[in-house]
Image 1 (cartoon, one colour):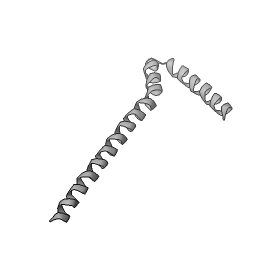
Image 2 (spheres, rainbow, N blue to C red):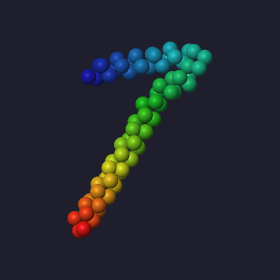
Image 3 (cartoon, rainbow, N blue to C red):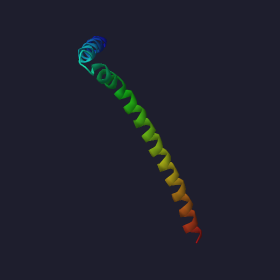
Image 4 (cartoon, rainbow, N blue to C red):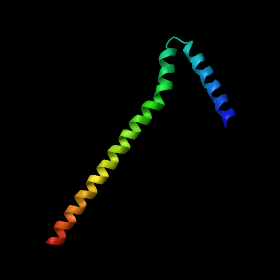
Length: 71
């Protein structure tokens, strides 16, 4: 596994170095480096928001069920 990770890292660095040689290469390279991080942050925020929404809906459903049972 370590050897595969080292090979992947070397290939990734070589690809980024190749992209940096173009006119807008630096911006594209930074985008490729930061995109996974930004994507996962957005994904975590979305999952936390969805979890909170589901939890709040469960609380509201329990309150409604209590009202229905009381009547």
